[in-house]
Length: 217
Ligand code: DX5
Ligand code: ZN
Image 1: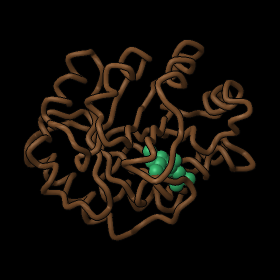
Image 2 (image 1 turned 135 degrees about the vertical axis):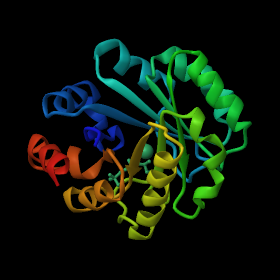
Image 3 (image 1 turned 180 degrees about the horizontal axis):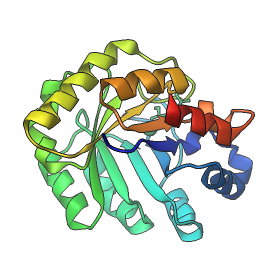
Image 4 (image 1 turned 60 degrees about the horizontal axis):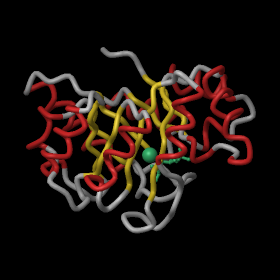
């Protein structure tokens, strides 16, 4: 059973003091930092871009888990690689040659992730499982923090874990959206090991306690 990874999402941080917020996450026990990139087209929101990834990379050592919610990940890829992303996740629903994009991420020395929305069936990602380091099963419709967890995604997490087992693969299974201690426990039981949590970490009264609860749930 692999170790649980907790990845606070910077989207829920206080943007007026980003440097201090990143430090607070690291001191509170974050394993990875999750960076939500939204282009106002693939999702109905705009967040931040490569400059934010670069400044976090230059000022901290934490592993940068970069989630590209953009329509043309192939077009923006090189900028996020150059900015210092450690892992780059692209959506299977976006408009690009998925195998080629995953190959370019790995060729650059980064880990490659593939994401699917709650409504997207697992079949869509099955052809690519041997090309990824992480599968991201969205547990909300992407675009905004603070939404409610969708329990109907749990069987898909189980199916992903079963496919991983039957194919003898080792990719991480990440969940993102509405993760608190209770839903983290449900996802871990289904087979997920990487927990993205925005509101429940950055906006908790005690971030270290919140991360510890998500880790042990
Ligand atoms: C949703 C983003 C998430 C979001 C999670 O579009 O991909 O990473 O920040 O936020 P919470 O944990 O508040 O649901
Ligand atoms: Zn995300």
